Image 1 (cartoon, rainbow, N blue to C red):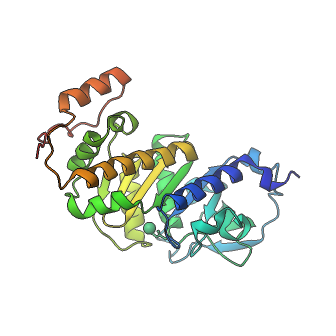
Image 2: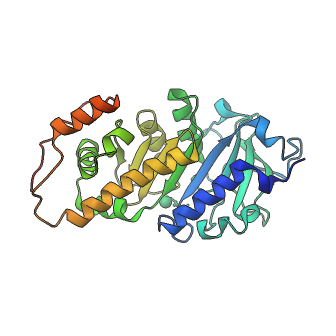
Length: 282
Ligand code: 2HA
Ligand code: ZN
């Protein structure tokens, strides 16, 4: 067996968590990541027949949550109550590798959570989001949640309307429409960790790779850790520009005609319905 600390998936995961912490997106135990691994790559490092513990999905009763469509799939995931700050120095305590049990009701621990920990309280929301994303993109691997400062700040001063929010972000930085032409889904404020927010997030994930949780944070999904991080990073940069300028008279803007020109030039299709927003000049 190879040393798991040499595994690319673990090294990359630790480094992305460290970056998210460094950027202030994951204070205390804020945020969570789940990363779908290939069985082939995991079995170089772990004996897949050795299950340390079997755990039910916390807080979700059997009828409420059925993960059988992804039974047998293996995820590297952050732990509940664990701090992103500590992931890099002690991955085996702060992270775990779990497999969805055959019945779709339990998780089998294959590595990590060595202090008795368990996956993030948002794990069912993550799994439902994985199922939704895999339905539209079979290559999706990552679901990432965090609390980026400017995105959160923007939630308090900008309407929480998907089309308006997306349109404003697209205007705040030229690359936005190229990076997320599909826009940003927005959920109203909801209690986190619940079945309701999990289901609502997964529903949005059928259409969006980015979902803002009103006055809480953001969810991103993608094929790789880099791609998912990059999506959130691009939203956060645009939100930062918005927050640095929202209180000032705006004398220039990227027009809808220019946004459309960008889309044509980069070969992306902007989500329908965004350009019906008035081109706000304040
Ligand atoms: O895990 O961010 O939304 C901590 C959170 C919950
Ligand atoms: Zn959160």
